[in-house]
Structure formats: C-alpha cells, structure tokens
Amino acid sequence: MIHLARPEDLPVIEGIVAEAYQPWAELIGIRPKPMDDDYAAHVAAGYVHLLEEEGETAGLIVLIPEDGVLLVDNVAVAPGRHGRGLGKRLLAFAEAQAREAGLGALRLITNALMKPNIALYERLGYEITDRRRSGPRDVVFMRKRLTE
Image 1: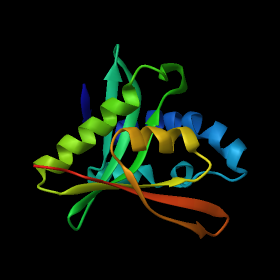
Image 2: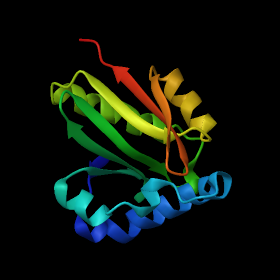
Image 3: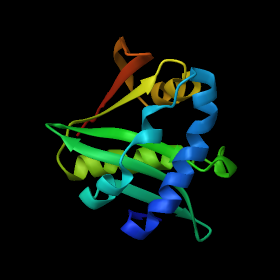
Image 4: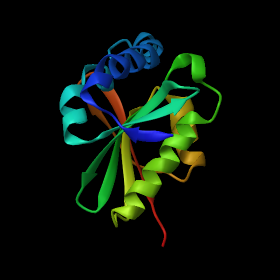
C-alpha cells in the first residue's frame, strides 16, 4: 500500500533516507542532496508517499509536480528491504500519479556515481538528457516520456 505521509511519519522518513543514502555518501564523498532535504515541508506540501509492507514503512518517494512533468525528487527503500522490487513499485506509482495529473513525463536527477540506480532507471525507460557538474557533484538528468 502506498499513501501520503503525515507529519508524525517524519522520524521514519528521515531514518529511511539516512540509512538508504549513507552508503552513497561514502562512495561519493559528500552527502547526497536527499539527506539534507526539508521533509517536514515536503510532507506538508503533500509530496511524500510511503510504501507500507508487512505493517512497516519500507520505502518512500517524493513527487513534485512541475510544468508538464512530475519530478521524482527522491526514491528511498529501507536497506533491509532491498532486492524486493520496492523501488520499481514506487516508480510505477510515480508514473500512475503523473498520468492521473495529465503530465506527459517524469524527470529525475541523480549522481553520476550511482551507476546501479542509473541502470535501473534506463531499464524502466528513462533517458539521460544532460550531465553536468553542480558544485562538488557530477549530476545526471533523466527523463521518461509517458505515452497515452
């Protein structure tokens, strides 16, 4: 089940994000941007969706509507739940949300060193649209067009 997060979910959200991104922080040498996001503001805006599995929050996705596109701002799965297809379920949910909102595409931004994630996004139909330096980060921009 996927549902909108509530303010009381904030500790769980922040915990999953911290655990999910810590290995990437070690690889990249800097904290990934999602580790420093304002999740209280995201929850208040209705952007955070939680995936429940076996009565516990197993993952989350942050979806921000933009002009004609839905930004997948963050996808995080609790490390103990990796390998179960939960990230794919969250991304499929994002597609359904975009279609329901009449948006023609999804976009996301990731770090170039997150190669397994980039490979997953490409398998799911995302294409790299740009790559550039952003401060200390090497950033990859990806987009998935939705068909009717």
